[in-house]
Length: 293
Ligand SMILES: NC(=O)c1ccc[n+]([C@@H]2O[C@H](COP(=O)([O-])OP(=O)(O)OC[C@H]3O[C@@H](n4cnc5c(N)ncnc54)[C@H](OP(=O)(O)O)[C@@H]3O)[C@@H](O)[C@H]2O)c1
Image (cartoon, rainbow, N blue to C red; front, top):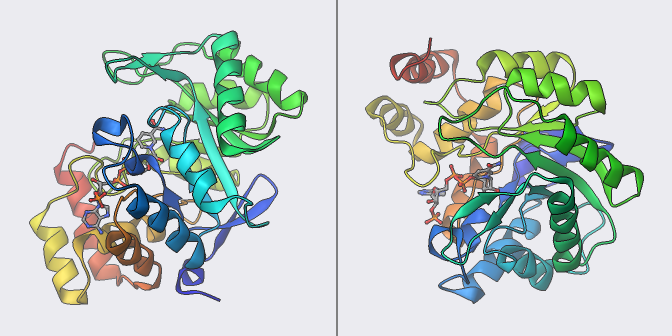
């Protein structure tokens, strides 16, 4: 039993994973491109996460590219039996670090093969099909052709379970009509509440919701009301932001990202943080005042 067990577990596919997990994107170099500035520190973050009981790591072969998966393999292979590695496909990086759509069936297959090779796996537990955002963000265009290609790789045994990322409610429904979806990974945090209704609908159907940018992403969340609650609890604002997500809905799994062992430990400790109803109300108001309908 470790501290993070206090946040409980959720079923992802047919594996129980702890709700407090780790997102590995920050381990690559600046702009998620190239090698980390401190390779030993990156390895230490991954090993500390697992030593502290983390059994779910979120990654992609387009982080680096290849770099983050290779670090995960170097740090953790042979993997503990209970470790669930979740990856995502749907983009490729240009030589200049740009993020480019790779949503065609042959591109998705190449990406799954890259993940398998660099992680040293013969099957990946969960692969998210990441819908490439358009110039105007998310849209409702059909994802059937791409998702069917994912289903074909699942049938071949390369993927155990499928998830979807950057998806609207319409696209989640379209994917679910094609094949079972075990998780949805979208942007969501204290201040970015577009998915409120989707989270509740997925919870009712027993599907995990995995918010990316739980701390605000490249510009961590900054609100005086968040600071005030943190001060009252003798916690950090980042811990409170994570505790709010844990309390927001039982189907939420957390994958906060960091390149620092100190920040990792701080984030994991949020699993033990209890928020009163009053603190939740104060924090809920942040989302309302920053554009929530
Ligand atoms: N599906 C998608 O399209 C998509 C998009 C983005 C991300 N993701 C996934 O979501 C995961 C989480 O997202 P993210 O890492 O981009 O954003 P995040 O977890 O919201 O925030 C990470 C940022 O917060 C900083 N940070 C972390 N812990 C901190 C702490 N205790 N105190 C102060 N600063 C702290 C990190 O810097 P330090 O390194 O200095 O700690 C980093 O700059 C990623 O790792 C990735 O797996 C998915």
